[in-house]
Length: 569
Image 1 (cartoon, rainbow, N blue to C red):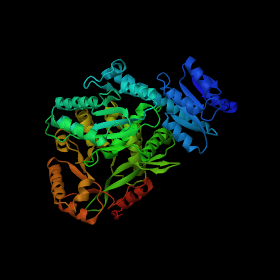
Image 2: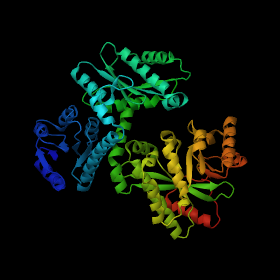
Image 3: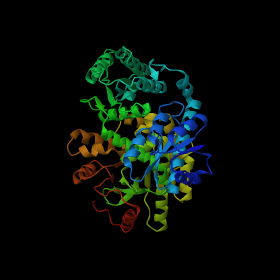
Image 4: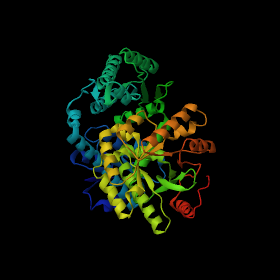
């Protein structure tokens, strides 16, 4: 059922025509009437105008998000054109999306479809977790985290919301804590040591809340949250006390907690969004030894709104071909000619222009959309190579990124085999780049998938080699065809003798393991001279070329065919 709430009848009539074939439509002329209907009917989605008599859309949204029985119903708000402030406020209050008057039927249908698809995905995730780990039932019926004794995530959300709404006279803050490099601690020591750290941290948090005015929860792994009255704690003292408590365990490793603080300015904001803001603040300082906590501010709010925009527009962008691939050549250092390329995704947004992958890829990795974007890039790379071959340009192999989420898809190999068959390519023309993080997440599954891919003729590249702590251990277990050496080494070879020595050792080791190497991020003649002296042959970076649109890259292939090398960018 769809509930359309608008005091202007013609607006309701227009929207009813859009959705009458897909939904049972119920209408209301103001917010008060709408809430009465929601009490009596199983509503699936609400479309509500923000400006109405009796009760406006903001109040409807606030009341729905403050009640457990309403908060999971997606709400799409209707705004006038160019009313950016109202849109931002509504999204902050928990609106799933907004649509703008006058209504464009294609965009309106697409946005509602996306909202319902996201809602369905959330339920699918919950169902999958219930089947695999039976965690859903634990979260629903057991209040306490079994390891630490503090509230689990769902109960923390409920308790924190009730605490803040019942005590309106007190300003509260959400504090988000995380341990730096906790996976390293679990690898260096036993899991029991990691569990001891978590239990000790929980005891400390509960001790500083012993007066009862505040609550603590464990979100997941090494992530904790507190809901406390603002100004109750001096954060420097909290961090110092936490450090002293953990140090008393006598563990021979520097264990550092980082924190983010969100001063709550709207108690009706969903608590998970409050925690997201505190988490965002924490990420600003994580890894900084001099500053261990940060407060949420307006610049972080802008990042959050951008992320909401990216999530809102991603489906439509894929359907409307706003994504495209650029190709950065990999060149032979001696011949100056292109030997392969890497396909890099670009997003040309109709309103925001070219959006950097650094802004949207992390968002897609978190929400799972990266699976579909990866497959788009793979197919575009195959299509490009097929077209180049048809034009007699002698295409070179193209490498594509395989996000770690894709390794959990059982049909990965069959999908890739289907692509190369459809575009009449040999498997070694489509090269697959994996990252170290995929190995650290699930090494056994990654090894099995990589083994199958190589047996079927695909070449596998290890991207950003040397960027993490377990690279050598990984090579022992995970044979790949090529190492792409992290650009951090390249940038330091001119000034650091240690970086030079490490780079030489990596090249020697790769040759001993019968692996090829590609050095990324090369920009200067001095770097080229050094890489030449230690036996590097394949180079990727701005020294030769920036990433190029397809048409420009075909120009390079045409020069390649004539024996003409790439000129320095």
